[in-house]
Length: 107
Picture 1 (cartoon, rainbow, N blue to C red):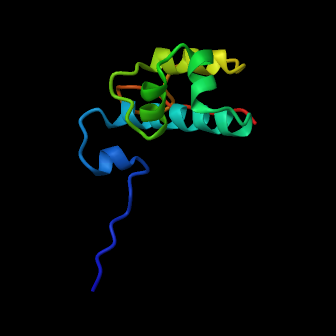
Picture 2: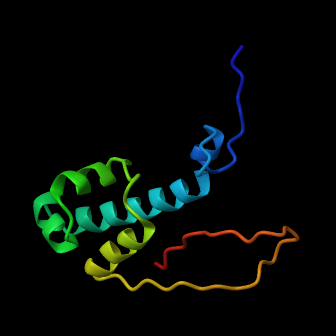
């Protein structure tokens, strides 16, 4: 019989990565960057020029290899792709001592 484990919603946390929250954020940002590049029908070569990033590094990021690429660099990539990025800081609504960071995309 198969055992089914319910996900926490963060695959990196489920796999026990110590930096799971950061990895989840980077994965969401990389996914949006990939979506924009694809919808604009850009090649990785042309996108890498726009993003100021070597094509092999862009290729790795789009395949989920984003260690060594900061969240700030990913936000800069979104700006270079014509996206406005807003950072909102507010008091946590949870009873937990620490707040949380999430990424939301406006449609």
